[in-house]
Structures are given as C-alpha cells and as structure tokens.
Image 1: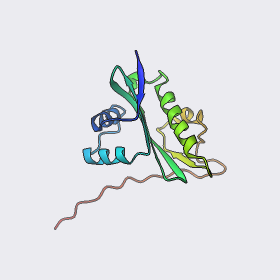
Image 2: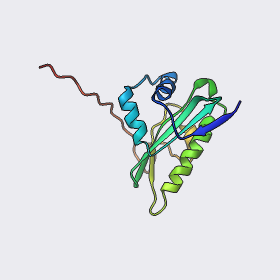
Image 3: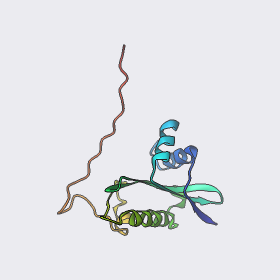
Image 4: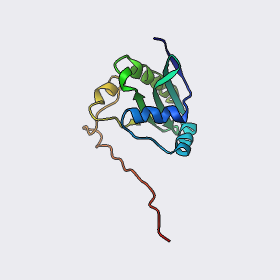
Length: 142
C-alpha cells in the first residue's frame, strides 16, 4: 500500500469523504467555492484513491482547521496524523511575524487526537466553550 499526499481534491472526492463519515454531501457549486477559497488543502491517496483530507482557512490573525477526514476503513493507519502534520507545518509557517490563533471544531471524543498537536479542550480556565450555528436561507413565498 502506497500513500501519497497532494494539494488537490475534486468535488466528488470531497463529497465522497464527508458522506463516508456521516456528514452528508454538499452542493457542487458551494464545494467548488470552498475548495478554491481554502488557504491550504492536503489530501491522502492510496493507489490513486483519495482516502483523507484536511483544509485550512486563515486571514493572517486567525486560522480555522476544517474537514479533517479519513475514510473509516483507513483510520488507525496514521493518515490523519500525517495530514495534521502537514496542516501544522503550514500553520507554523503562517504564524511568523506576530503569531496566529488557530481554531478547530472536532467530532465528539476526538479531542485527544488534536491535543497531540497542541490544541486545548474548551472550556478551560482561560477560554469558554466554542459555539456554532448552522444557517440556511429560507425560501420566501411570493
């Protein structure tokens, strides 16, 4: 088994990965926009098949680690750890000249995985809990 890492992923591969971990799929145009706007993207491939990915958005002051996904049948093979290694290398390079506050939201019971990369659980004595909201524009009747 040969694992390679690349900085590209197709819309179909993205949707395949997120569907495989139970996140559903997303609109093709919106996925294309998200991939194009990613500041950093890394994908893992085994024999040409994409089996994992991770993305980063950043504005120079803060960064958001997103979509860290490995197909369930390939978890436990250090693919996620390698993906996050590339992410952290990118973030460390981006943090020069004043630092970078890095955020991520992780799945339940995955906190330990991210702690090995220096992330802290929230809430803690310094920071409150993270919060999220899913917005979806409602169609209006005319």
